[in-house]
Length: 191
Image 1 (cartoon, rainbow, N blue to C red):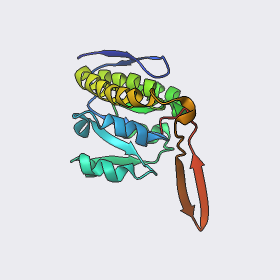
Image 2: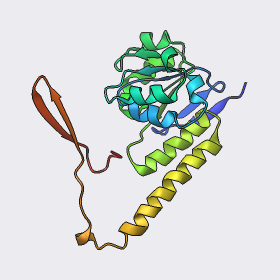
Image 3: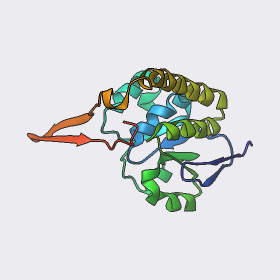
Image 4: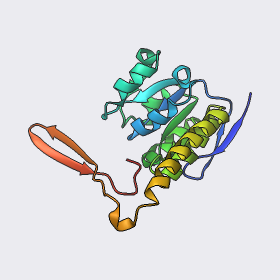
């Protein structure tokens, strides 16, 4: 057995008794976690359950995971009993789902929290995933890739005076029962 000790996004020490063979991606905002998890090549074999997603990520993930049809789908607000029934070695979820942690740990199911809300958190959280999947080389490749892209953009934008920089508004538009809704993410979110 290879015990893994890591510090998650909440600063908690998490101990995994071994490299997880059954990983469940649970809770609200799971699409951000799933998108990052699936940048690691071993995850199509290790992920056994994914919470339902309302941002159409499942359509994308089904194209890259040859085993997608075998994955259990669980409600994003599932309770500890439903999650335990999946028999995960590890649950990965966003920090916005903290209410489940104590209950899952009582059931001896390790929980790893991630954020993925800022570029700094993205790099940190990829490193955490590298520890979970015992693939730090892949985590470093991804961190370097995003860092190189960020530096390339900054090299151009840093030369533009602040008052001359264009601003961008990103809206999420939806229609539900004929009612139009617009959502705007806060400026400090990754989106």
